[in-house]
Image (tube, rainbow, N blue to C red; front, top):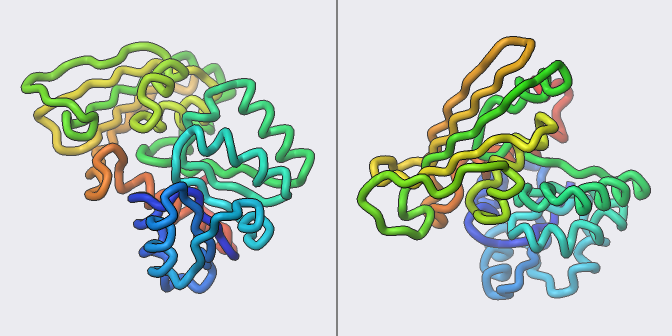
Length: 253
């Protein structure tokens, strides 16, 4: 499977270096507004940095986005229109209902698929399982260090409290997990974002209540060394998704 990358930053670097020896995954094309950054990552994978995005799409089997919500809006329609599948990391872009409906139709009309990794949280399989069985309430409480949010404070502070659709607009690079959870359970979930100088990890606490009962999960992620805004688990989930395409037997969903 030949893969083309949109965005060659921290997450892309982790994905590329972790799959170099995987004979079933060949990341061959690298696209980034910063051409030098694309060239540097391409050299690690013995791939090619590209300027012509449409040419890249024609030459790969799948496109993996590791850039930004705006990149999803700009490039996803082109990828899906070509009949290629796409993995989207900047899932917050899909909280725009009009855009979600648009790319869903494009994918269906062109026999292509959109894949959304589980990202920096655990428990999505459970949420999906109960999403259509009277799920009453889902809450996400996220705690991040001041460094990961570009702030300098010495005491805990609530930065946001509201719906996921508003959280992803205010923090487009920090709270993709809210969008992932919302899409998994078909609900605009409740979100609280706390900046906490006492934590050195990205902590995500999910609670769900419904006719099935109740569950809670806590994920405590070490931030990516090259980019504290994101968690290592986000990159690892994308790697696992890439590898799952070649599995004969899959566990979970």
